[in-house]
Image 1 (cartoon, protein in one colour):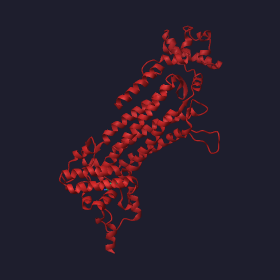
Image 2 (cartoon, rainbow, N blue to C red):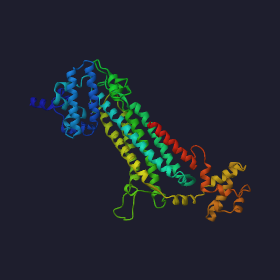
Image 3 (cartoon, helix red, strand yellow):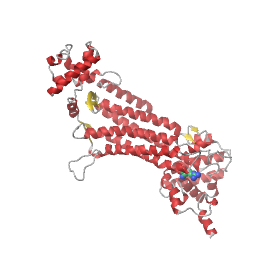
Image 4 (cartoon, rainbow, N blue to C red):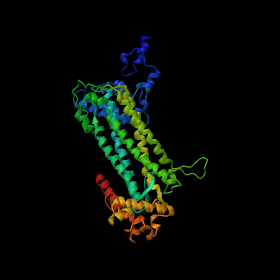
Length: 470
Ligand code: ARG
């Protein structure tokens, strides 16, 4: 009986200490292999760098290192071919790979874990994995920015009602409006590149929490794995997940921006507004209402934003009560992080493809501009330029707007005589000021909506993207 038990227990890497096997329920509850196998490639890279350093430092022999190297190469290709057998009994990606390595190369495989713990190993794997994902997300943000610039370039002169409080405020160009989303994406990329520096540090060498008694060379491992620096304190190295939280916060902002854009797309596509159409391949129909064409992609992006906010809140909460150093709680960091990465990647990919499929209905945009006294500020500015203090000009125009509203017409449809009732300063030249084109062209400074400014903003943005790529 005792013999039978110790045999069952001995299948675990850490089982020597235990007198009975873990129950099936606990095994399932504590295992992470079902999801952390996603980091297998990074785990192998980290192990290779660690083993190479051990050999350089004469902690393991050159023969052991080459056995480890060829064993890991075999495992890599088994995983790539989908032939690697992941085993719940081996708990996580690290122990699965180590066990297979030992089966392939014997004692050398058992020496790989010298001077290392799964605690510094897993922290290294996540950082390597996230670093690659940040680069992929940055490339997708760039593609999304290019799509926005292309569409903005086609609509540098297309007038759109600019809203505040969702009430018609002043004319803007559709291109100018899209450039606002370009700016958000620019900040998103800045945040990711800033966060990447803190992701890109090596925890390996911290071992379980205190460092190791072997003469390791952490700098060489960092250099081989492309880390900018090493984590300086062993306790912090194994327990820090700030970098994952920072990334998820940046991801939450990316989604927040996409969600705001989505809300506008949904509104603009509503037949009551009718400013745009989205290509059929990004929309779906209704199973009951034959006439429906629904903007499912932006709606779902708006909805998925909530998942990423949830991932962020989950990670913050995961960390807040943890004493130093590593705790098993940390295993829960992976699924929210993976979910955020997957959600952001899928969403950005689909947006980069969907934006070029947006068709614009300039007539509807212009018609909407005729319904909200969008050039009232221009009339006030006109009076100020003729010497009236702004507050008085504001008051005079407000009364003119009330009259036009009562007539059911726009300011430009009032006669010169009617307009002059509100200010004697008004002259024939007022009608040029009251046009949408005049209003747009007047906002001719950096950051303004004048078509010439929109075109140069697009040119500056393209030049910045180009010089970043060079
Ligand atoms: N699967 C674990 C994780 O994801 C690896 C580290 C486990 N370390 C330990 N001492 N139990 O965090």
